[in-house]
Length: 389
Image (cartoon, rainbow, N blue to C red; front, side, top):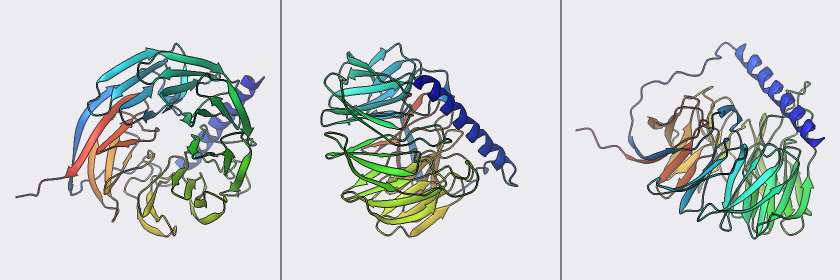
């Protein structure tokens, strides 16, 4: 019965997205902004490339890349899971799980874990790719699991968060949030922070749960829905929250970005902004890929807008990534753009991928690693361009 409900929820969500796109197309400037020439001050080098199988890019919303510092792990809809050396992209192992993967992989505690649209979860040995265990939960998985402290944390499309034992996949606890009648397709990746499990939901709420037993530590509404229609009231948090010391940062679609106290759940500040892609942080800034293609920097402590960049309007930006003094985002055509983190100026660009990037980028040392919706993976290095003589 849950499978039927999951399919219905997906159809409704896809219908909502179609209607949103139709509404957007009525705007005078509905086309993506054209890329224009600029003075590049950053040289972007392609270090290595790879790919992971799967011929259904529209179903790749929950498929991403993960790293444990030694390897980069990626999963394809066709069931392949691959491990690549971070520095060189050399294939360390590849396994065909024979599952139609839709969420993951996540890595931690020596495991690489991914899930399917039918609720199958497979855990592989991070060093060898050998299967450690398989479990089943009767709901769709559209986000990478979080793994740590002996727990595999899985977010399900029916509003549940389930904790499994990392050693054998047996269930420890389950908690849930109400699922709205209408929501975007996709779910936020859960996060493990100390003894807490953190996750955003389609209701615009962020929950903190005890990692030990699933009891609620706090539950806060980041952005209340507004508007008359169900579409206007979409308020999903579909990206992972960011944890920085005692603070948690979250952003919602058609809602707000917020700074939340990790211990109490109190909202320290919130600012109106809409994002389904997500955010990134550095020492003083919070960078948000807006749903209209605007890249915004907010002060991390204050929430004050420091700069706004509209040069990529309507280009369906990826989640941002901070690489030293640069902020990078990819667009719907696989271009990767680099901005000066302090000033917001466009300083570099490379056409390194072929499709839109939905997956959150990775930063490992001085490498930026991205995967597009067709499963192509690229590792880049950016450095100041040689001065013109």
